[in-house]
Length: 119
Image 1 (cartoon, rainbow, N blue to C red):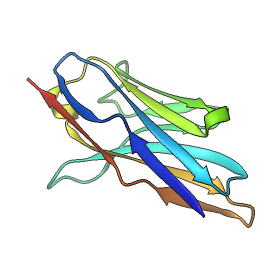
Image 2 (cartoon, helix red, strand yellow):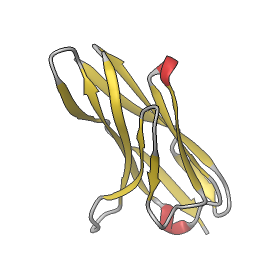
Image 3 (cartoon, rainbow, N blue to C red):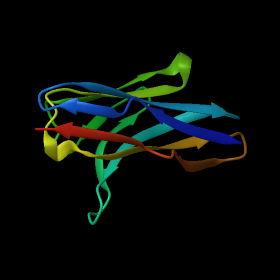
């Protein structure tokens, strides 16, 4: 059984920073990719950043230059560092990961963490 848990959300003023964490636990043989998404009411879920573990990263245009996704393999954790936050970054942020649990790989989702940026 594999679980993903996000943390690090909160309330911050525009221009501030937050770092979100996505921690994977359970029966994990390998983590292949981790994505961070965000969603606000009435809008489609938006891919914010993705990382191929040990490889490349990609970012949505709206966050390039402000957000950084990085991994800590020893802790099965992927972080999303968010700088120069804007009110339009307000959303619930969720991570998903493709994980090999020993009998194949599946995509798992966390519950999400809320980020509110005040102007």
